[in-house]
Amino acid sequence: MDKYQGKRDCIVVARCPSSAFLESNEQIVITSQTSLGNPVTLTIRTRWIDHGEGNMLPGDLFIEIRGHCIDLETALAPFANTALPLVSLLTLSANAYVGEVDVEVGYDNTSGLIERDYFQNYLPPESFIIHSSNKINCEHTVKIIEAVERCTDRERIIRAINQYRLALSTWRFGRESLSLAHLWMAVEALTKATIRFELIARGLQNESELHKALNTEKKLDPAVRELIILQGDNECYKKALDASDGFEHGFLGYDIIRNHSKDVVHRLAKYVRHEIFRLCNLGKTSVDVLINKPYDQPLGHWPLVKYTRGKLLGNGEKLSAEGHLYPICFGILG
Image 1 (cartoon, rainbow, N blue to C red):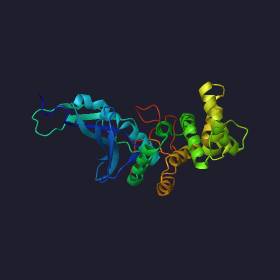
Image 2 (image 1 turned 90 degrees about the vertical axis):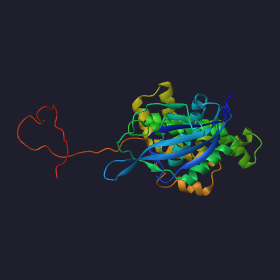
Image 3 (image 1 turned 45 degrees about the vertical axis):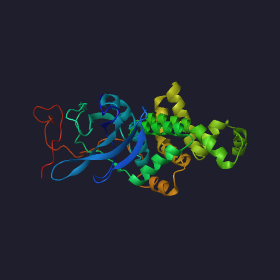
Image 4 (image 1 turned 90 degrees about the horizontal axis):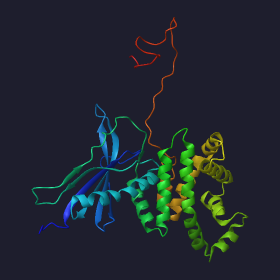
């Protein structure tokens, strides 16, 4: 019988593209449990890439998951799955998009062996394209993770956080409607949690009492969304609701949906994020840090862009260089 049976020291390493980064001397270490019941330790780091002449810039986020299991093959998927909620929590904390998790390497790290199982998934190399990014605040990120774990409505909160991350996955000019659709789903996920939170906070017995306290003709769920989650912002509520319903059911023109979305998507993101912090009872110090610069504006994962504007000078009708269809600037001469 194998004396290491059930005691293999397995390491699984996943990585994901990210607009949130940790300094080269920083890491976040948390403990979790797999679907198999195995305790694991997750270590989050950023890999820094030399872009030449000593210019080190952040690359992908790496998440190392380490624990004991019967063998590497059994460990791979359950270990990797423990990293999935983290990408949404990191997105929420840094207010910057963290992409999909891919397992890159797995291996048996048990001491005393001369033969070990090994797994590698051949992923594309990290891009040298520079992206805008936010630094992760380690201290307050850990506090968010702990607060969500303690939250009585954890499952609903996690659903809302996942929708927030999906909203940031399309966070760029021209895609406001997709971002808003995910943010509105986050609002819907939070609604029942907000109702339960308010009942306790106000010392009320049931939803009828809360409805009466809100003093509105709207039904309870929409009233809670407008008056509490969206903090009484009627314009944001109406345009977000119309855009979401129009997008989902196809009864509004896309130009109207996009205009509504463009008008309120930033506000809606702020309200969703603030409500998640409130429902988790995140401490005031952490909230104050995470709602102010540089975390006050959502950040997608898109490359920094460079534009050239100028004038084309010279005679003649052929404006492009030989062998090219159009005029193009190859570089700027010193």
